Length: 60
Image (cartoon, rainbow, N blue to C red; front, side, top):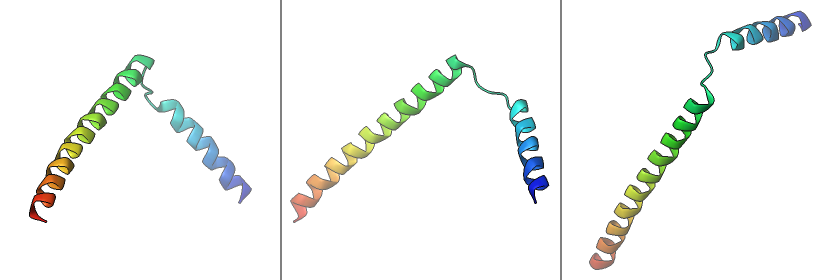
């Protein structure tokens, strides 16, 4: 059992060495992209929420 765990961690470490990690600049760019898209979606949903709230208040 201990040997299997040891082999698992050795293989995991080997796989992590093969990963193509993004550069610092790419990470910053991707983070900015995710935050921007999230903000746009939040504004979009906020506008629809406001519109539906107004329509609901008119109906009731």
